[in-house]
Amino acid sequence: MTNQTLLARRSSAVPRGVATATPVYAARAENAEIWDVEGKRYIDFAGGIAVLNVGHRHPRVLAAVEEQLRAYTHTAFQVMAYEPYIELAERLNAIAPVEGAAKTIFFTTGAEATENAVKIARAATGRPGVIAFAGGFHGRTLLSSAMTGKVNPYKRGLGPFPAEIYHLPLPSPSNGVTLDETLRAMDFLFAADIEPERIAAFIIEPVQGEGGFHMPDPELYQVLARLREQYGIMIIADEVQSGFARTGKMFGIEHQPVRPDLITIAKSLAGGFPLAGVIGRAEVMDAIGPGGLGGTYAGSPVAVAAALAVLDVIAEEELIGRANHIGARIRAAVEAAAARNDTVEITGLRGPGAMIAFDVPDPAGVPDGTTAKRVAAAALERGLVLLTCGTRGQTIRILVPLTANDTILDEGLAIMTDALVSVAELA
Image 1 (cartoon, rainbow, N blue to C red):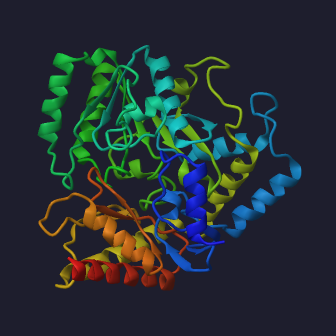
Image 2: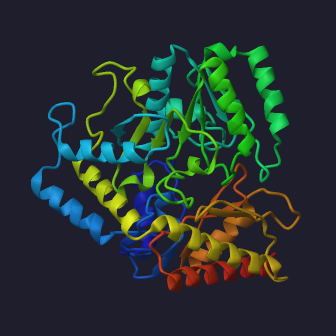
């Protein structure tokens, strides 16, 4: 079996709408390393798109899953509930940065989490409007695509989208948008399209994922808090990519001076198993009556067992502190590469904890994404999996497992630097 033969089979059997960042096919993986079907080894700086904060096949996660498999694999929580679901909800409620008592419900994917957060906010407020931010990513289902603030490839040719979803520019030092510009756009929105009294919620990523790892201006949260106080507009923190120690906090929103009403979670929650959820203020979470929330596989007992183990690993291996250590090491390597005169241009180093990104514009300084893709391809040839992101694809993002040791991390960073040099030589 080869990568090429699998690529041909994929082309015949799988629709092109699901893209794959690399032309290689995984055979096995361990912690921060992957081996393809031809036996080539790769260092994983993608982490399954921020899913593997505790690495591939963590022994604690595997043991928990194996134990659960021996007991039962599915009953549907809506048919016959099970204790691990309740335990996981209790543990998340205890650590979630919301005001007062919290409750948690589980789903399967991040898009389900964001859609259900909107359902809950609309039920609790009796209002239809939702405000998201340009560059934000909230999923690929119809409502979550409507909230996503990037047309290509997530919206192009796929409308019409659900109504009452609005977008504002995200104010951030790294994307060149000021808070004043966002507030001016907000004034226009409230004057031209919808009054604030009809807005159910703002949905915002504490660190934009697909949009380019931009962190909002902290003063934006103060504005959102004032609007919540004045008009009752809820704040939904979308933590699907930024949660579970990635940013050097358990939740990315903990870097900011506000407590959200609802938090969406997924990705690294269950260490590679499909699990998502919404955590929120108890009185808000109870706004929908019995039967209005759920899903056949929502809160799978196998995934819940994995998630309980993930929380144990984060605590016992001190991965919050580890994220800050890894982030400092990544920053130092990127800064060293940027100081050289033989790499492609490197700008905009940013991100909290180990959620780090930087921009690679083309030789003319235009952020069109072509050069960034060449860097990722050159890294892959050398045995490193890197992902790009950003509204124009110009951003290199690093999401290495927090369990990676320094030797593996430094090896990957050296490969990344070599890729930056090699692309410059071909320019």
